[in-house]
Image (cartoon, one colour):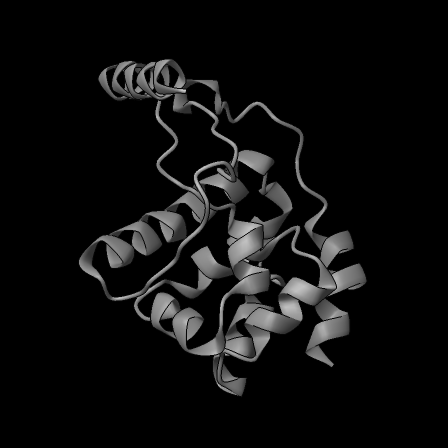
Length: 156
């Protein structure tokens, strides 16, 4: 057992030196669907509506219901209006990941400062995708289809 823990420690040290460690123990989708209202409200403070709207693309109806209750009607309407913008036709999976990363970085900073508390077992880490593999050559995301099938059902 001590050999295994020593090996895990050495792997983490190598990952840190190579800057490939997974800094997020959670996936954005998990947090959107599982965090309490107050914590989510604190996270959204100061985050641009556009960034939130793009980060929400691809969430399930259940996740959207959870996050919707953390916004005022006015802010939710602003988020809905973002999906009507012409630039939404050019959103890729990369764009969604980048905007989710912006929010995840804020969550990480807030957690490090003790402003919010998130905990999870060490064996349940989220996926890691190195930045150099995140190319903007991906197919476009069908934002309109997602808005019609998921977002509009929540916005009623």
